[in-house]
Length: 356
Image (cartoon, rainbow, N blue to C red; front, top):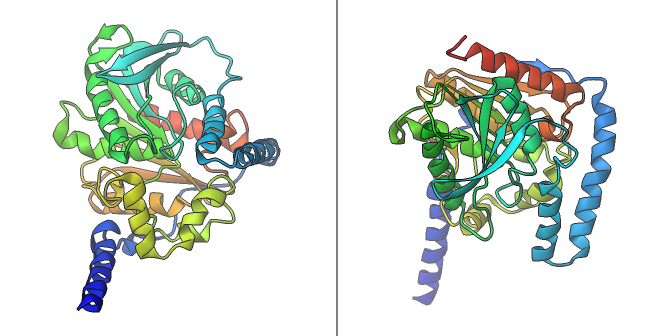
């Protein structure tokens, strides 16, 4: 009897992983990419500058021989990515409906034009301070005040905390500008990597749960599927110089075990549409632009998201750059393909600006 019970438990564990924690099979949305940009000649010089920095951070973190201390090293690096930023923009801390956040306000920015921005960092590191370069750039491109959300992160908090914080900040920005209550004439929602996941979540969620929807959405190298089932998660491990070494470790586990690891680490179902916007209702989305690199592990997630959204009638565009590092808009800002990508974002913002 005990053996029967054992096998029954194993069967239940496998079935839950396959049919609840892994999400639906979306292989039908894997396809070719239409809008591809070639790498820029200046990219190699930028990459040669960046890679040694990343290698040093990884070595310093591994030398601590402690997960907690190693994470502290990575967080310190992430918090100082924008330390060399030279700008006349103002950065102002604020509590947005109980959530820590920071306003980035370019000189002359219209407070009635606002952007909600969520930083990247795999949901375990990153901050508005570290991502000031992106907030500053967005503020200038859109002539808008940017609210960067300092959402709660793993492992101190479950994955749902980042979702709740983003939702609270969204309600806040609908009513408030940098100086308090202020009418809203234009709203863009944006984020990179993990933050891209959160901005795409808000895009769908706002349809039923907010007084107003975004005018447009921009996601940089976003994560859309916490179940990690797209083909490039494995195929691009060696070419992804940013995520391959860390995220690639998870691909060594069988799918069933990986599903339970995801559930345990996130403390929620990884296939939940709030954690994985790919599985949500993607009909009637705001105009959305997604950027991804041909080299990154998350590419397939963007492809699936865009194709599924298009199949539901939404205006969603994917632009892919060849041979870029994950989140190159931030890490290689001011160089080659990053500059070209930011120019495309400016075009998109202008195209979907109701004031123009």
